Amino acid sequence: MPSYIGRFCNSLKFVVVLSCATVLFAIDIANAQCPVSVVAGGLQAPNGITQSNQGRLFVSETGPPVVNSGRISIVDTDGVRRTLLSGLPSGVGSIGDFSGPTGIFMRGRTLYVLIGEGNSTLPGPFPGAELPNPNPASPIFSSILAIHISAHTEAITTGFTLTAEQQQALAAGETVTLSNGAGDKIKIELIANFPNFVDNPNLPPPFVIHSNPFDLVVAGNQVFVTDGGLNLVYEVDISTGAFSVLTTFPPIANPLPFGPPVVEAVPTGIASFNGQLLVTLFRGFPFPAGSSVVEQIDPSTGAHSVLISGLSSAIDVLPITSKGDTDYLVLQFSTNMLGGGLGSLLRFETPTSTPTVLAGCLITPTSMTLDEKTDTLYITELATGRVVSVPIGE
Image: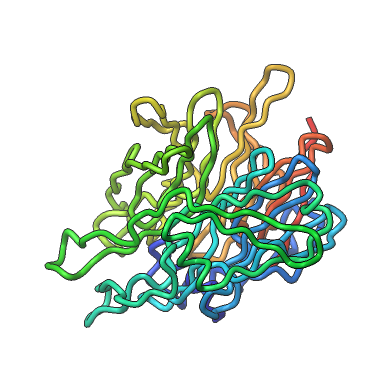
């Protein structure tokens, strides 16, 4: 099983790796609703997607299981891919998982990129135990990078590479400027550097629990970040880099006759809408049917409540408004995590209405972005390395 797939399953608290492989590869799309077009292929474990004001797509990629092989690609809507930045932090974690760039969000000419936990922890002496790695492959795992890129560079660049020395410079608070000798350049700065792990409350020191920064959204002067390992949302001040925990999500009781007594929340996708935050809770193993939800968070207090319920492995959410009416798009990684179900895209006219299935044939989808000019939704697929599109219409 490719290690990036193991990484994704493990990072979502799925400890039965062989079952996860079955979920990802025992796929039958013959009877699925499938109005999907392939835009681009050959991406390296794509995790996040966003669109620039020039109309191009930016995709974050964990990369192959090679240290510091994370990448950001620019994908034209006609399918042409170019590298924007390679050499981003990545590494194999404590449970054989592979982690690198995850969430991505663009505002104006600044691209905000979230970096995962990488190899910041090591396997412990027994299953479920992990220890701090004294020599992680990067000093900027579990961080937010801001990449400043001009429209000219976006249009012409053939790519830049971040070195280990430049990662060290970013960790020290320096701004790094990259130039490839072809007349284009980008500037990179570190916005925030989160803890790579916390003490394990159920084991004595030095045992820890690794983080899993998964997605981010920018609203005003704040960045909000989901962490699927620590089951929380961070709030980050862009100007100062100061961050704090906005809210945490408790586990729920496991209603199934197997698995652990409780099921973790596992926050994944995040969006900002009408002064509120929307966050998908994927839920952990054994993925009880209908337990995944979309939560609404008040960013001024951290108070949260269920907005949409009854979901299966929800991994991203996107509110869309037309003529004063708001619908909600929800992306599901699988309709049946233990039974090999395909991923799906759902549309809710109201949070409590029965959804319309816009696409039922997605293969391990991870994130989505909407081109409002064409009403086209672009979706990344982890296992296939593809960007696909779905028309959503009115």
